[in-house]
Length: 149
Image (cartoon, rainbow, N blue to C red; front, side, top):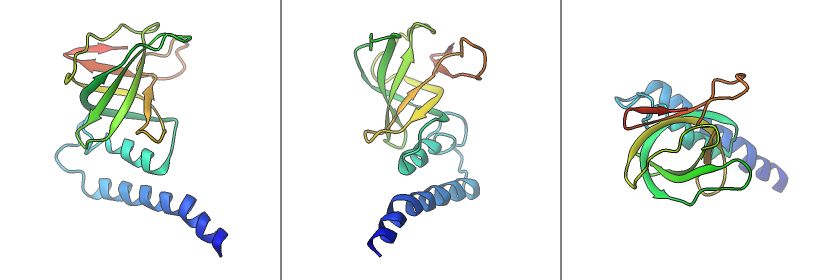
């Protein structure tokens, strides 16, 4: 019985939570359903976080809550914390070997498309740039009217 409860808690319950969120979004899209809104398209981040799901392409919008030092190991990445309108925070890791560095300051607003990877701190979004091999659609960041790819 303990194993069944553990299976329910670890697999079935997160699935049901995601299913309920998707159903709610379908039947209650609200007025903020444009790309970049955490209540519309961006709600997929909260669903992926709840289900501990990775590898999902997402579009989200929010404000820069914190600027972090660049990650210079391997490909160079500009890093910052993006706070969605829902309050959920994400680490954004933007490859500056493949795309231009963003001229960011704290509280700047932006919209981005990238690949979400789960972690217990809210998740990471990377692939906010074009695919140099041309196989994937890739991502982007829209900041102050400029699209960085």
